[in-house]
Amino acid sequence: TGVFFFAVGVFVSTFVFNPFFMRFPVEGKPVKMKEYFTGDIKTHLTGVFGGFIWMFGMVVSFMSAGASNPAISYALSNAAPVVAILWGVFIWKEFKGAPKGTNTLLVAMFLLFLVGLVLITMSNT
Figure 1: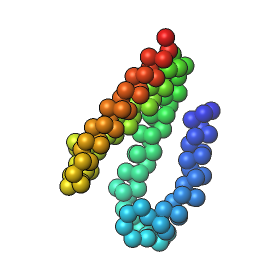
Figure 2: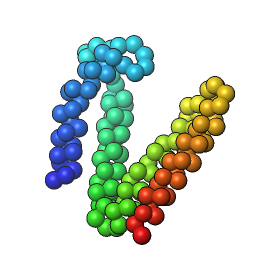
Figure 3: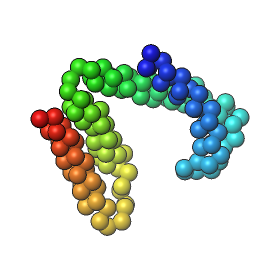
């Protein structure tokens, strides 16, 4: 039932957040709602596929929460940003051309995040 209510919540909240972020985009120019419906099927299926990945990750997180120690489950479920950091820095090169000192901050952030995860995981003893 948790998965069902999560899916319903995501579906309903789409009608709130989608118009807002179309009107006030984080990047680029605002778009009208009718432009959303003129998108090709590949673009829409990419979004649906992203939703399936999100849902799958949440289901696996729920399954792991009951199968192991809560501290370990928490650490594993919150390790996703580590993967996002690595992809952003090394695959998509999001910080290429960033100001001097950015790489130092990225390394510090990554290491501190990992230390935090390790400390949380060790807290079960």
